[in-house]
Length: 419
Image 1 (cartoon, helix red, strand yellow):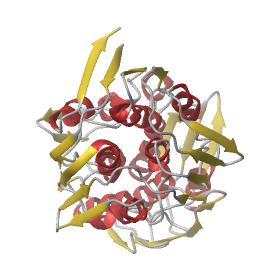
Image 2 (tube, rainbow, N blue to C red):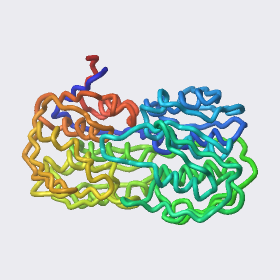
Image 3 (spheres, rainbow, N blue to C red):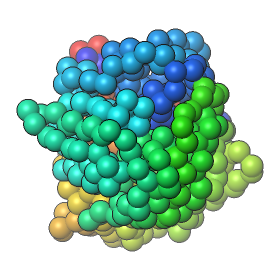
């Protein structure tokens, strides 16, 4: 097990290249199961979650080759059962349900378990499968779905805390091979959903409306192989934007889609930072302490829940009092207690974090509780006095490709050491 030591006080400048999106790569790799023909996926990030997905595909019978960010999947003969021992480490493994059901008309996938940021059930996925004509059983910790055939239907995937991204992905993949037309109302509109839809269309699917709340899928008899490049990771990009605000003078992000980052850019502009964009770059110009903000996390295109922890780290050394309200995962504040160990003054009031800015945080031993919390603690350590010791960094390796090396390339002083 590794830990990360962040030596605070170093100024960041220069440029950094953003990796491919984790939340796009995982369902796109799963979608390769929909065809017997080879699929070539480029810009696949080197992450532990991606490694787990490739293991799952291999277990299901696919041939998988990986070289320099490119993955080739040949799923000529596949099984339809994914047991607990191979899915337990990653909740996103449920996205193999849709392609297995679509191609094999049956699937058995073990439930991957809970999540530290709160309950994230898959009931909307299962409701969608049932609407397509599948029978669904949950028994002995496994989800079993099967159907003689799938038939298009109108499905509403709007949930209590907004639309479900993985649920939208799953239903799109299953419906691509269903008979007739499927309409998803209340669909997730995230760029990652659009990326998956673009890949499915490259395979021969007929999908319209991705990126809106209404997606129309006309089923086809079969899909073929395709090549695709994964979009840049907007959450990694947002994390480096906040790093630049915390400790940077002028930092440029390369290979980004600025439109995907509008909500984060607007928040940083309100906090007093300069943002410059071109077609595929974005530059953050430092300007000292952030002004106070009031932020509400909501589904895309609003401010993303996956950037909430990082903004908590930034505003902990800000001016005045800021408030961040979490409308998607109300329990997603595990990082607050660790930031308080570093001297942050944060009070939780229901689903809101009330942050009173302090002059400077102090380095301390802290514990990462989840992926984005771990990133927030690393960012907090960039400007803190002394050394911040971030433990359980296997969380950060799930979603950030070489974050320590990338930050060091901007001028940070970060060590990764074996425990």
